[in-house]
Length: 219
Image (cartoon, rainbow, N blue to C red; front, side, top):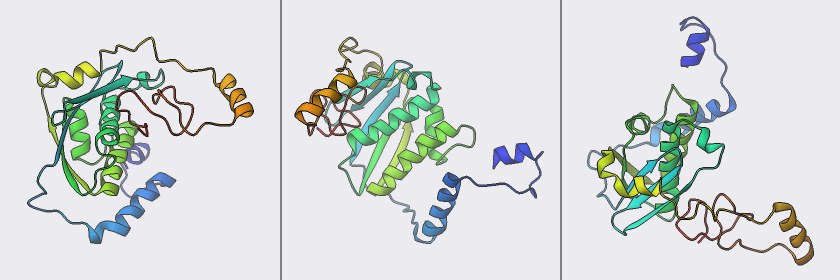
């Protein structure tokens, strides 16, 4: 809407075209608006975790279990704005900590005011990339029936997640067998069922195991 208004000189009577993605968003509201509920007293909080991002990587921490995890960004991801990376780290947190969670209330902490505001407003009209990852988070929570409370935490109190997003002991071990050689091996011996000791950056199969909690790992 904001872009269309700008293109039409602020004329609210002008017509605009909706992309397929925008039509999907409007269709969701048409199909679901009548069934949506808002509880004055939400469910008790059952899960709490912290998130942070740097230009180097993402980091997560769950105080209940003491689990912290993180990983490097791919080269193309590292070029994204830090606000987008903060939201992407929050989405990774959903996949890491809430993949098997349903009908719950999660308290999420971030030291990014922008990420906090984007989620509280359920999207962004200023950044399509921020809006993209906010939509991913909200769709995930909808599918899992998870209510989220997002709070700001000062960077000085977000130490574990901050460290996990910056300090990596395996910088020089994120390697993989050449994909062409791997394809040749598979053509001779067959394709394995699962990629062991991989990560989201070097896995060569849809199913893979990771050393630390990973947003795409099966185990």
